[in-house]
Amino acid sequence: MDQIRATLAELMGKYEQKEDLESRKSFTDPDVCKLYLTGICPHDLFENTKFYMGECRRIHSEKLRERYLNERKDHFFGYELDTLKVIQPMIEDCDKKIARGKARVEEDIVRKRTLDPMIVEEAKRIDSQIQAKMALADELGMNGEVEESFKIVEEVEHLKKNKLEMLEKAGEGSFQQRLKPCDVCGALLSATDSDRRLTEHYSGKIHVGFQKLRDMSKTLSAYIEEFREKANGPSLNSTRDSRNGRRRSRSASKSSSKNNSDRSHRERHRGYRDRASYRDRDGHRRRSRSKSRSRSRSRRHR
Image (cartoon, rainbow, N blue to C red; front, side, top):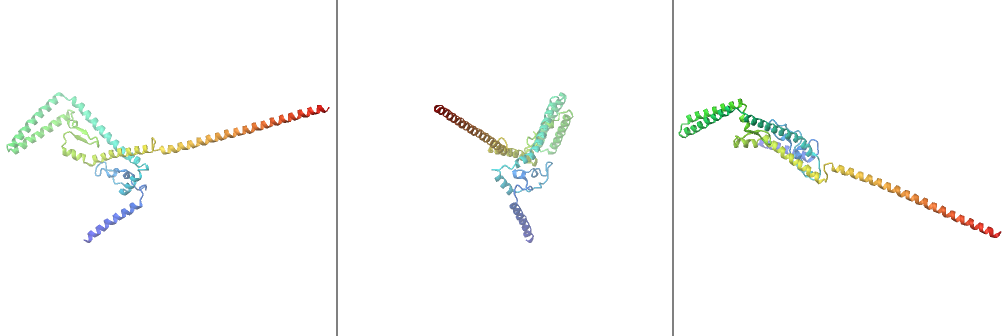
């Protein structure tokens, strides 16, 4: 009982430490995993497979993720772009693997078309033997001759093996022709796989991991595009471009105002000169008339 209490206390202590840490942390802190905040961290995928990247060294916190998802509705932090830079190369490598698998299947189909007719006839003969022996094995089993039935089944397996080896040597590669790469993870699937085998594949860590990567890539790209449209610009730099545009507009406005001010100043100066010139001409006319009257009075006195 004491051991149980001690274990429970230890677990509660770790939980309280985590709660305290999350309350003091911000999702912008450098030791917080930004990929996890956006919805996926590749380090959490492919455990115990050849694609496993090891444990992530940064903090994964569901509470910090909730805060971030709430904040990113109105602010773009760029973490989605960082996530795409990591997961897109993984998806592209997988797509290359799928393309190589499809090319391999196509090559096998070409080889099949050029197969020696004698090999084809021999394969058909073996198929006939297999069908006949399988029918015999079923009949023996129905009659209770189980041991004889098992012997016939072993002979059938031997015939199948001989046929496969013959076709492989002839360049047929029939086992490959029935294969096709999975469109999600690139694993080769056989047309003869049982439902159980296919279920195991589709629920496997590699297939599920690459499916998550592909789905998240679409989700993040959609969010980025949505935010771009919300910002009313062709790109996430539209805010910066808008600020530059406003600066240019203000600069042009100031320049225009300065030009208008200079023009107005010149017009006022020209007006002052015109009025001064007018006053000079008017004064000159008055002086001329005064002199003329003075000369006229002088002549009358004489």
